[in-house]
Image 1: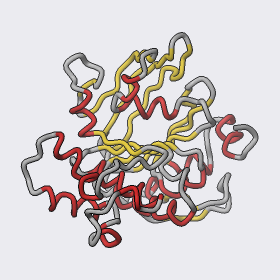
Image 2 (image 1 turned 180 degrees about the vertical axis):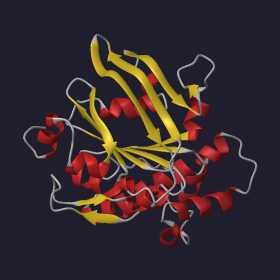
Image 3 (image 1 turned 180 degrees about the horizontal axis):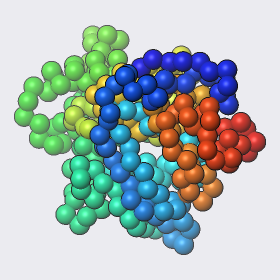
Image 4 (image 1 turned 90 degrees about the horizontal axis):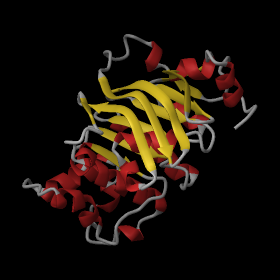
Amino acid sequence: MSNTTSDDSLITTEVQADSNDDSAAPAAGTAVAARNLNVYYGDEQAIDDVTMEIPEERVTALIGPSGCGKSTFLRCINRMNDMIEICRVEGDVEFGGKNVYDADVDPVALRRKIGMVFQKPNPFPKSIRDNVAYGLKIQGFDGDIDERVEESLKGAALWDEVKDQLDSSGLELSGGQQQRLCIARAIAPDPEVILMDEPTSALDPVAASKIEDLIDDLAEEYTVIIVTHNMQQAARISDRTAVFLTGGELVEYDDTAKIFEDPEAQRVEDYITGKFG
């Protein structure tokens, strides 16, 4: 992905250019689509009638102030909200042409196709090899596990750093390495979509930069959907940006360059320029 700098941008950062350059890449199909999605925690509404289509093999950023529903939306995509007893979901989330909330959808099987990386690195207290291989063994993978482990670690830009210590505990790695290990674990089962919930917020700037570079590489093969509080990060790494504001409302969703340089909604401009949030 190429970057461009605009003096007219509402924030001082580099903004993705591909989104507005029809020659940069072929038009993407739809990986995930939300249709009239409403989410409630008890009586409190967290997502308010959201409809949007997320393109495949692109990076889509979800931004907005704390409590606006962006992480709730992310967790709807692979049904992680099922684990919250008081959570109620209405509407559709389509993946592969199927509503993931249909009664015949197995959430565990769904999460093999839609992996997730969390805010805080959470490697298992196992070896590096066993961390990456964990999901493969659970699903009864009958291929060459060592080969898949190597491929996944290379895909997470971690192989060269750990190839001689695969039997060491994943907990011995640095925070940035642990997060890349979690990414390797997420891509090992060969998903189509990777969800990331503020994956760099707990990392130092150098480690965060490595994750950003990795996200750019991952989008060549996977659909990446990332929640971030860092608007500069969203502008740097994403092709499309969705802006959620108070009450779980999706206020604007467009090419990232358009969102940051010429948003349609005044509320979005106010948020991006720091007038609230």
